[in-house]
Image (cartoon, rainbow, N blue to C red; front, side):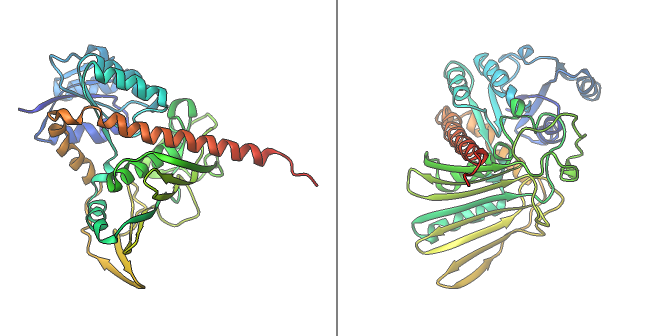
Length: 357
C-alpha cells in the first residue's frame, strides 16, 4: 500500500523537487499540500483537486502517514515538532534543525509521536556509492578532505542569507551535506576537536549570486558567511578538513572527497546539487604507492540521488530500528557546527583586536 504523504511548504524545493518526485514515485500517494501563500495552494488544488491547507495543523494521522517538510530552516522544528506530536512521521532534508536545544525538542516530539526521517541526498549519489564501496581497500582511514566550492553560487534571495532564518550561511547549507556524507561513508561519530574560520567576502557583492537558482535579489544585507574552512577530529581519531563556499575564484562548482588510509587514498571530484556550472563528469581515482588509477563511474542525470533517497523512505517508515536514528545523527552535526561557529567567532574577535606596534 502506498504511503500517504503531504508536502509542507511550496517554495522552490517543495514545488519543483519534492512534489513532482513524490507524485511520480510508486511508493507514495500525495494527498495534500500546505503553504501559507494562497497562490501556490490554489494552483495545486486547481491542477489536482487534492487538499491544500494554509497551516500544517490541518493534517491528521488518520489521513497522512508522512509529511515532507520543506519550509525555511528556522521553521523546521516548529512545524516538524507539531506534526510528530500529532502522530505523523516527518522527513526533513538538511539542516534538520539549527541548535542542540532544537534537537532536544524534536527528540521529545518523536518519542511520543511519529518518526523523524532525515538526510542529505548527496549520500545517495552513484559516485559517492562507488567511493563507499572501495573504502575497505584503503586500510585504516586516517584523514578525509571534504569540499563543496562554488564559483558563483550565493543564494541571493529570500531567507537563505539571513542568520535569524537560516541559522548560518555556507556551513549550514553546504557543510551539512558534507558532514552527512562523511557519516554515511565512515559511520556517525562525535567530533572531539573543531577549529573553524568563516569569511563573507562575496555574499554582499553584486555578481556572485547563483544565477541557476533564479533568485530575486533581496533588499536586506546578508549577515552570514559565504565561506567556511575548518579542521575537525572525530572521536575515532580520523581527522577531517572541510571547505564550504558559496562563491570563490574557481571556474566551476566542484564537490570533492578525498579519503586517506594506511593502504591507499581515494579521491572523488564531482558536483553536488543542481548547478549547471558543473564538473563535466565525476572522477574517482585510487592512489597506492605512487600509482594513480582512475575508476569507472557512471554519469547520472542531475537529481537522481533524490529519487534514490525516496526509494528507501517507505522501508524506513516500517522499520522500528529507524526511530531515533535521524535525531542521533543530527545531534552530532549540529554540535559540530555550533563548535565551528564558536571557534570562528573567537578567531574573528582576535582579528578585530588592533595589533600592537
